[in-house]
Image (cartoon, rainbow, N blue to C red):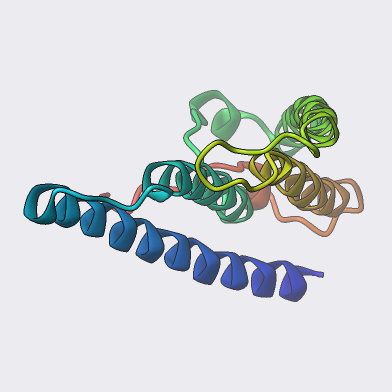
Length: 169
């Protein structure tokens, strides 16, 4: 399972890079066209905004897998293994609940907006909200995987402190 999640995150990193490259081309091209030729790409702003939202959510999935989100672990590090385990379980149950709220809300928004069209591109607005569904499902799988590892005793004590050390130290 860990290998599949790592491959998935590698794929997401490639998608994020592609989103960023397309955004750069669209925005830079639009600036050149506006100031150099007094014209522009109609869909540039809308598509760039959508790509930014998508790469942000996809990046958050990768960060969740790599435990790269910000966190304060001062108290947890001082606890014995059983305390770390309890904190980890409570923390991940709360994150799963928040993930469920985001997933269910994104799903509803995606369904509601299936027939609505974006003004510039004419694409379904459901595409915009679908990234929340992808984020919710992906993050839910990652959270459940980590939680099951702790509950079954497969995780080390260091794994129960789900904060990645800064590379500056």
